[in-house]
Length: 427
Image 1 (cartoon, rainbow, N blue to C red):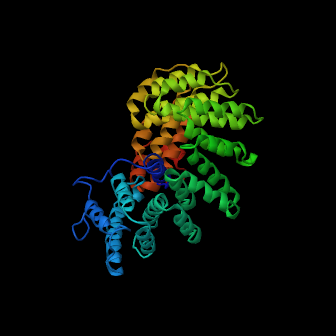
Image 2: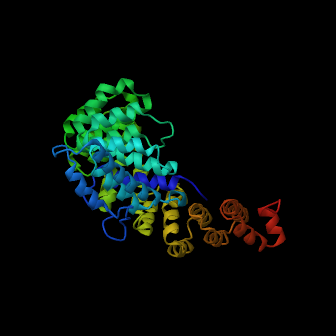
Image 3: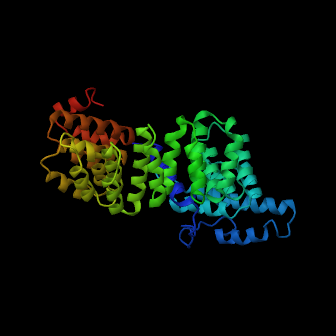
């Protein structure tokens, strides 16, 4: 079941965790196994040495020399982009960070030249957009104003990454005051949706070093932007108990339960990434009414590492009339995707939960991974005949789009009545 979503999600995770906040570690491509050589046999470290000779304060060679250097860097990044394998659903992270490291060592002038060359490269559109996004972000970290001017003047409808937002967030990680000043000066030129997103990101970036200033600006935002601004701010201050309490205390004074709950959910999830026990204590002290939503955020984050414990805690927090299968289906599906045997053993031992519902959720994840044989084995165990048959149909429908011959072999192995139920036309 092919989709662009997995690799887009992977990019956002990589950029959000490792890049936008400013990677301090060396590239994952350092080492002989992951450094793909360009036609001249050069590696990223060779280009870094060249970059030193090309610094703004170093003697400049002629324009031809600079152009040649940029050409060589672009050639190397192009080779890495060709290794991304986006059509397989998940990017090659060695190649991804190799491109990032190359862009990191380029000057704004070189990046602008490289962006001009991308249009002429014989690359799949997705791979070219990866390169463009990382070049723009690195440019913004070095010279945010000129990078923002570039993306403002060169909007391309084919871009499926929000270049404005990525540039502004990257700029905010290195110069939050500058990023916010740009937003203030240019907000009237932005579309309403862009304005909300920019404002939220600019204030959140400012809060990293100047919380008091950011908090004051957040208090004065328009009510239509409030939810997004406070969620972004909550994510930034989640692991600072004093600042997050100031934020929550203020939100409780507003007649806006949604803003309080959504910001609390964001904070709880961020805490849980580093400190599950701390997140549990945060939930226990939650002052708002929608405690179940906050609990769910903590459980989902916890469930990525300890799903059985997370589900037990989540179910234990439910109201008497709540459906436990609804509450833990996402956690269980993620567990089944990673370690299906463990998840299946746990499920078979549960008597007070809708097992068929959780099996169906697990099957969705396996279909997403094109793991059709495993999906069938899970569907075989669904007790409700209608649900079992519907899952067979869903699996077959996805399977035949991806592997028509394999799907047909499985269908042909079923008894005639089953074949007719799954595929009335026989195909």
